[in-house]
Amino acid sequence: MRAATIGLLGLGCLGGIIGTGILGPYRGAFANYYHLTQTEIGRGIALSGIIFGGLGIWQGPRIADRIGRYSFLKLAVGLVTAGLAGCALFVNIYVLAVSWCLLILGGYLSVISNAVVADIWHEQPQRGVVLFHSFVSVGKILGPAMAAFLLVEVRVTRWHIWPWRGFFLFCAIWAAIVLVLLLTASQRSIRQPAASADPKAKAAPAQAAGMWLPAGLLGLIAGSEDSLATVAPMFYHKVRLLTPENAARLLTLHFIALIGGRFLFGLFGTKLKPKATVAVGIVPVILVVPALWAHNETVFTISFMLMGLSFSAMWPCIFARLATVLSHDRSKLTFAVGMTNTLGIAACVWISSRILDAHPRGAMLFGPGMLVLCAAVFIAFGGSPPSRASSRKTTDGHE
Image (cartoon, rainbow, N blue to C red):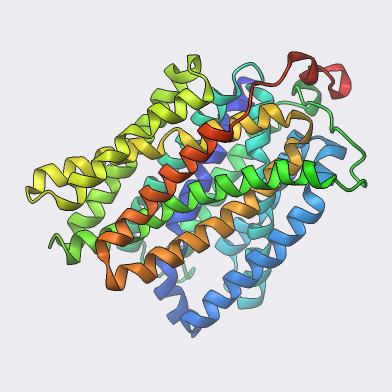
């Protein structure tokens, strides 16, 4: 299991690298090479996300519970590897489109990794989920750095190695290594709770609400983090008069603090109950006041950097809590969370961007304010720990 665990954490890091390293840095060069407009690129990205996201939420939980979540994850990583390799090796726009669709499908299906983490760290799911998302955050920093390196160092050759193809190739090799590591363990070695009901049966309204409402809360938390990250560089450039480079560095420091907080909570925060973890983790959000209104550059720089701590523990802690309470519906929960994360991020980024034009400080307050609201809802309605008896039924004789 050690190699498989390393592969799982490597997959989290790869997800962060792909998320921040492909679309932003290479969008302009890719559009020029294939003579596409930004509208056409955006339409293609949106349509592929909607189609394959809908396909995943429709069939994903059913297949995952039938063949096992860990086996399903290996299938998803195989699709990701094939898609990345196709994007790296072929320049034909139609082959590239098919490869991109494989990547998007595999990427969405690999959201099951959150449930697999809870399965593997079955004794301390909160620690596992927090550590997994720590590696996702590490990848979010590595992605732009790798993209910048390739944009500077990679030149067009007779083999048509454009920078984005080099990035796809790097990610494909990483994904192949992850797949090999995951293949070292079998489904039977993973302690997976059994599905609670026939996958063909429809959930009762109360059960559906008990899953989708918390999943929606997680989507808003993810949206609060991304909305702040989206508007912060512009705020510090336009309002605080930092250069674009220094504003980008400040956001990087913010993410470094977020990563540090996740590692700390993952290693030392398991003794706290979920509500206590959320209550302690939200305290640094008060630094938004000096981050926005302090005149001293050192003060607002350090304040915004340390604000990253407030986003460290909440999402992983709440997901781990839900994965424990809904242990027999982890597949459905994970795909529901994948969908609500997509919707929550899109909605929060759109709202904060609209606010940014008229009220820059209001746009900066939107993300932290949403985070505080979500923390209050969880603390007020988080529920009580599940009984041990409810988590003993499993597949294949495993706990």
